[in-house]
Amino acid sequence: MSDDNTPEDDFQEMLRRMLSGDGSAPGGAGLDPEQLRGLGIDPAQMQQMMFAFQQAMQGQGDGISWEQARVGALHVANQEGRAITQGQRTDLDQAFHLADLWLGEATGIAATGEAPVVLTRGDWVEKTLPVWQEMAEPVATSIADALTEALRTHTPEEMQDVVQNASRMLRQVGGTLFAAQLGQVVGKLSKEVVSGGDVGIPVMPAGVAAILPQNFADLGEGLEIPDDQLALYFAARELAHARLFKHAKWLRLHVMSQVTDYARGIHVDTEVLEDLAERFDPSNPSELQEALQSGALLPQQTEAQQNALSRLENMLALIEGWVDVVAADATSRVPSLDRIAEATRRRRAVGGPAQDALGALVGLQLRPRRLREAAAMWRAVGDAVGVAARDALWDYPDLVPTADDIDDPSALIARLQATARGDEAPRDEMDDALAQLLADAERDERGEDPEGPEGPRAV
Image (cartoon, rainbow, N blue to C red):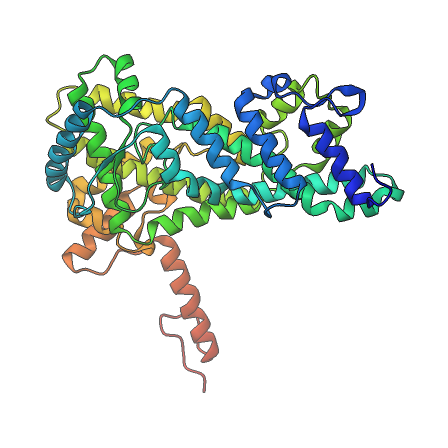
């Protein structure tokens, strides 16, 4: 090593040797990708990550390596991916066409005008990755910051200048680690999802309905339900989901802002990270794997995060509950409807391994817990005031039912019925109490006696 090298050059060279796998690290050991199978990343994927590490060493690019996440996700998605056959495409096109006609009888929200699409797993990755990036970026940034800070904390005073000069590179390394993990999760998720709206949040462009034929076929094998009936139900769900987000133009931004509000509050538990760094043995990465998979690096939720999560869960429950009711009404002619709907609810409630991994990675579960209650509320509202009044609640965010309405829809129904009659909306106890307080305050300002109905006027 040349004497002209700066401390930063020496530090980068040390890391480069450790990550190169060429045997030039101390003891001739390098970091062989084959030794890291325990992290859940196959050798080919690890080679790609090593390339990204080398770019970080050389200072190429800045911030999180989202391209690395895309490459990794596509690698996983395409491993067992199959092309879409013409027969699958034809069958699903017919299901979408018939389901769209039936939806016209079940909801007043108009068709999107967008042609439904059938996707391979790789197609799904490409179209949805920007949403996962938006959701994960605050967490990735927090991990990169924590990695830099942890190294500074455990570096001797005489080497602080080295760490300071290398901080940008370290952030890139931390971002690369996170991006590789995100790519693995999204790639595995592409093997579980059946449709565009399957994960709750709007991952597809507004108004676009999508089904993944390969995953749809895998699902049908375990349910013992005719494929044409399954196709009609899932097509109706997807089209209802697409109609809703196309109609309520505010809805996608509203949902994603709640997701990012939650994610921005996430900070990596630096004590856990530092403790792990002190004990970490590259030859036995199981502890690091457990920390990543279990979410141990993410501390308990703050009160602000809990509030954001509660709002998000209620909104997702309202969306999924409405879709459930509309899809069930649209496909009421399907003989196996009850079995299909129940199997779908259970599948969504349980989730899959990739959804669990996503929850551990970003600290956010996307399974609404109040789905059945929300669906029951939409059913009660529709029965009481009709489909048009029910669906009009999506016109503006201020009209959307609240968590209290999910618990007890009677007050919401009473307000909608009063509005339909042209009557003044019924007041609740809080309205009456507030009105009394305001009236008392006004009389007090005028010097009137609050005890009487009008109170004597002051002389």
